[in-house]
Structures are given as structure tokens and as C-alpha cells.
Amino acid sequence: MELSQSPQISSDEKTKGFDLSAGKTWIYPENYPIRDYQFNIVQTSLYKNTLVCLPTGLGKTFIAAVVIYNFWRWYPCGKVVFLAPTRPLVAQQIFACQNIMGIPSSETIELTGAVNHKQREIAWSKKRVIFATPQVFHNDLDKNIVPSDLVKCVIIDEAHKALGKHSYCEVFILYE
Image (cartoon, rainbow, N blue to C red; front, side, top):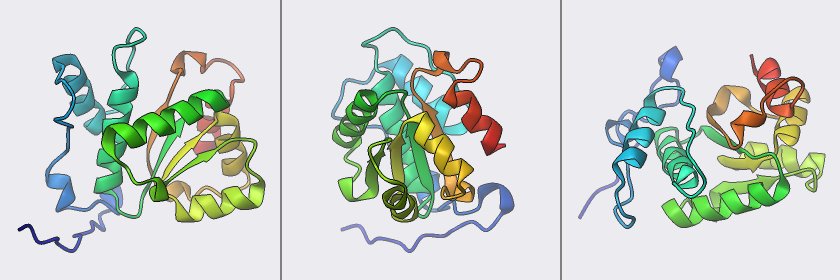
């Protein structure tokens, strides 16, 4: 029988909010075939900013789900943000991530332009894993309703679209 430990939360400025006990390990699902390239990309992505460029069907969503899950574990009060450029992609990603890693639906939310400002404000305060369009994330950053100090990981789907005045670019101009 495993006893759950109280989190040992780091107060160091660079790792603020990091659970030192959970952070000793990272989780990789064993109920899927282990593909070395996916394992290696996940491992790298957990510790370094990473651009993953793989053909369709080789597991980018799987990789993202594993990374999201580990940041969710490591930062018990932190936020993880997954950005996708269209509503259907946002819906597809939230469903896949919940199924792959079992992140509780009570911890996740889908934020698109269909969700009004007040509901988004509540979601940013209560949810920990946010799946959104870049336009919504940009607008919410601009209105200061994103607790940006709590955002520990941002995953960008379709990153090749981040050119010029695309919302992805605007997000990171604001985020700096």
C-alpha cells in the first residue's frame, strides 16, 4: 500500500510551485507500444523547449499528452496550456489527452471563442489544463485574466503557422 505524501513545493524562483517529491520521476504510459523516438522526444520535451516535427500519424498528440500529464503532476497549482488553431482541433486534442493519460475532466477545459469572457475568467482560476485557440489565449492574456505566473508549460499544435501576425506570434509578444 502506497501512502500519499504531502507535496514538497519549491519556493525557489526558477522552480516555484514545483512538487519536489513528484518531480523525482516522470510517467510514461505502459499501456501503449513504446516507440523509442516518442519516448526520447517526451524525455527531451520535459526538460527543454522543443519543436516536434513529425509526419501525421506518428504520435505528436501522444507526446503532447504525456508532457501535459507530467507538468500537471509536477506543478499541483500550475497551469498547462495546449493551443490549437481551430475549434475542431482543440476538441480533438482535449479528448485524446484525457484518453491517453487519464487527466481528470474536472481538471481540464476547452476554451474557444464560443465561451464567453466571464466563463473563461472562471475557467482560468479553477482549471489546470487548458485547451484553447491562440486567439482566445491572446485575448485572455491581453485582458489579464490568465494567471501567467502559474503557466508552466505551453504546447503549440500546428506551430508552422506561427508567422507574421498570426495569433501564435501575438501570444508570445504579450507573454514576454
